[in-house]
Length: 359
Image 1 (cartoon, rainbow, N blue to C red):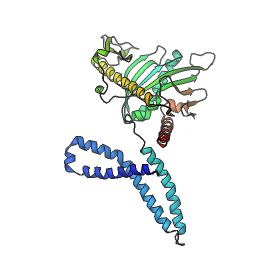
Image 2 (image 1 turned 90 degrees about the horizontal axis):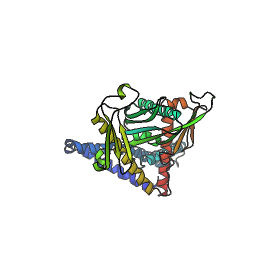
Image 3 (image 1 turned 120 degrees about the vertical axis):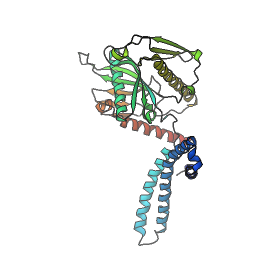
């Protein structure tokens, strides 16, 4: 273990002792805001300290075993303790490095998921519908909640555009690598010659802003238009101007919301989406300024970047950012995204560790 890493861990170990004392203080427990803040810090640090204490324990056992090597009766036992201990220390070292990586402040936030049909006409709208269903099924598997904010259904089925809010712990941490271009290769139902067509859709995953006030939106910079909702019928059509379109002049961002019958609710939802989009644009602009020669292995997340290909005839999905191919397209399209998410997360952590080594 590097000395710099051990110093950080010793500081965290001392800090957890301070927090334990504060949490046992009756004055602290009376101040709910302070108690929540301390409890949150305690829960964040404790897993790291627990693993570090295991590291200390194994290190002591190895050192004690080394002293027994000179005893012929204890030598074999001591060698086994040393060998097993060193293997465990290597595992713990990797765990601790991952735990000490900088945290993404958005990881625990809810998200706005936006899926838009791209090139490919009707087939791209159908594919956008399939991709949105894939994420919807994943949300069900995670026991999260999905709320449709806005949708523009295509005549043949699927969506020209659909925006949803996903509410669930760690939603952004799980789906933040999904932003980008998704390409499909398959034989459409309308194809009579059996030819494979290629079409695409784009996905955007935006963390929800903590408060709309976190993003400065000048009322003079936005134009709010109301209009009559439209759609495939039923709940998406009404006889009043309840749909809302908000245009943000400085960025050119346009947000529409028509899923609710209440104009007031549609406006509130549209403002929250606008805030998330503006914040996302600000973050990406800041990241592009500080990213010199470095580039994450996960990719830039640019909306136009092709990140994944879904090849139905071959039953495979390929993520081009990490050169990962999985032959389980039916499972993935049914929302089983864990293998993809884990591979992307692992690669991202490896890249962060490499950057820390360079620093």
